[in-house]
Image (cartoon, rainbow, N blue to C red; front, side):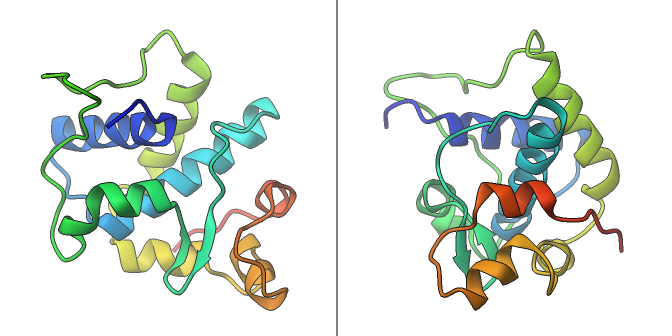
Length: 153
């Protein structure tokens, strides 16, 4: 597998979850990446990566994350994605302070919730996912993600 910035974000979130010992399912990982993307976008004005979030039945999702972890859809994820012939997982360096600030903010609020609970937050009727569904668009618009209100459970 060649290098993919989305899977690098996924590996970094998984690294945190493995270190802090909280479970992450496929759905939960998808939604945590979505919230980190949103937080990073708000904090910096820049997109964390270019791959679009798709308006799937279970809320915003990334095709590359689905493809990488589809074997773990019904269970907790217990492995990293490796790139090419690498033996150790690649994660985002702590030198990227903006990313880690966004990730830590999101995880401090949402790591305790299930994927289903996070799906509910990411699929609110006035959010980016719902707008894409109503417009019959396959992908969410970044401007809608930017303007989406934060929710809590």
